[in-house]
Length: 292
Image 1: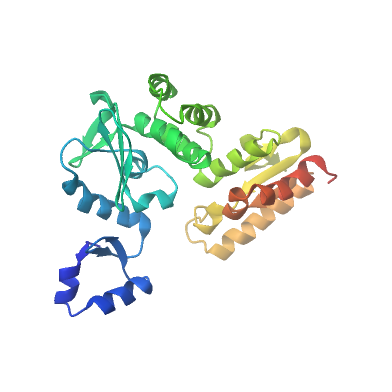
Image 2: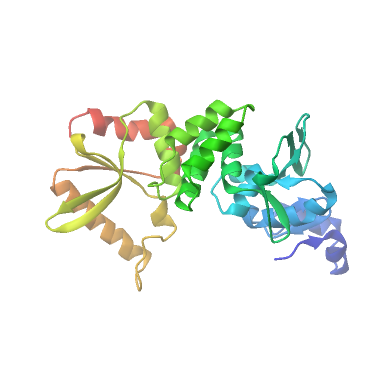
């Protein structure tokens, strides 16, 4: 959906009161002063970029969360309320209603132009996210980038070149990142497990029960415990051709019953627990250290 300007809405017969009501009722999202679009924050970020970049003048390069979005990396959607840019040079950062601007060295090799937009290259984007975003989201972005072909060497070169604020957090991100994580929810869960000091799980663990191969998101084989992040079920990633959501639920129940019968303890959680360490700990600690 294209951006609709105030004058366009006025021409359609919507006055200021009607526009306010549509924003209140979430029929419209205010992208910036005088610009509106459908109420989808992620989709609207490109529209925010398109309406903001022309106003900034030359030399501003999309970076951090905006560059991550353009690269297709997961992240904290709350950061998409502003366009994030870096302008090469030295000086302080600035945050306005629509733009978060960093002023820092930016070599030409760290910049690429795609579809007419200058953005930071993938490894630089991940390094910036690692320095400036919450660790869980940073790890999710790094793991997605690794799955897309970013090399650890490229990321390490970026981290070695950086002496900027947050570099220790970025290096922790790089140490934790594992391309075997298959979703942002798994990445966030693993960071929470790490923060809790719980045993490190094996990822994408294969189990064979009565000749049938199963795979778990997380496993503690010595403790006979499996962990499953359930966000992927909600989004239909497990649907097979011709299946309904109910079919997936029943198949997962049969799978879990087979694993339990083979002596495995299965723990399931969602984004709610991944974001709240005490809740995830309440599920995992009894399984890992209790009797079952």
